[in-house]
Image (cartoon, rainbow, N blue to C red; front, side, top):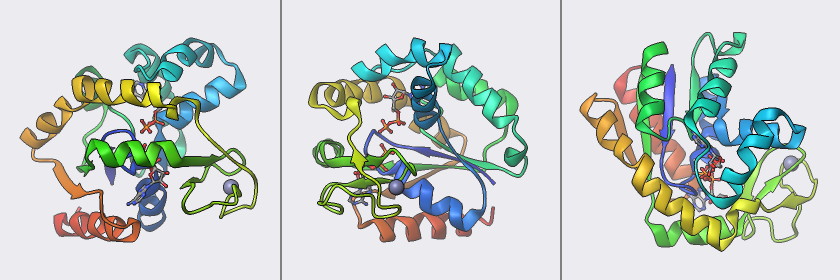
Amino acid sequence: MKLIFLGPPGAGKGTQAERVIERLGVPQISTGELLRRAMKEGTETGVKARGYIESGALVPDEIVLDLVAERLAQPDCQNGYLLDGFPRTLNQAEALERVAQMDAVVNIQVPDEVIVKRLSGRRVCAACGHTTHVDLAPDGVCPKCGKPLTQRKDDDASAVANRLVVYAKQTQPLIEYYEKKGLLLSVDGCQEMNAVTEEILARLQELGR
Ligand code: ADP
Ligand code: ADP
Ligand code: ZN
């Protein structure tokens, strides 16, 4: 099964991907994670990407496409994958289409006011990669592994404001693009986390894919 998780920053793509891959048994490919890892490791890609990410802009397509091509060539992607945060531009979507046929695109819908609340409280575990929210982990400790939680630099107010503008301009057109192809499944991302997961799994099952 080849899936895309689409939605604005903070919609819950990563949270839901983490849960859905457990049921589907395919790897989660998060371009945001791949880029953050490259930054941490100080690779050439990481050095080039940092300025874009920290200001809330998109990283240029060539960089992201190279990173994705390299990841999709790994053996664990042979039986499918869940793309989280990719594609984010029409150009990326067209490039993907040249190499793979998707089964469905899950569009997680959440209004801007909710996004701002979610992103300002988002916390990530540097040790195991788990994403949570300050309301769910007020002690600042990862509920999965017990290590300290951190805040992403691009979750500050000015980068968030910019990411919302960038989403509306560059990524939102993908909704219509995939709708026209008959691949879009829209789900209400404002529901409680488990309810969103169940809705996604039920909708995928209905497809019989
Ligand atoms: P994305 O990957 O789309 O940017 P995340 O999965 O990182 O979004 O979620 C953003 C923030 O919102 C995190 O702090 C996460 O814990 C929280 N969150 C995700 N889904 C829900 C939900 N259904 N209800 C409440 N908070 C949520
Ligand atoms: P979120 O879903 O919360 O917006 P991500 O972790 O998916 O965050 O992405 C973080 C940042 O990494 C983005 O704001 C952007 O700068 C960069 N990025 C991630 N995926 C892509 C992509 N497909 N194309 C361009 N830039 C990307
Ligand atoms: Zn952890």
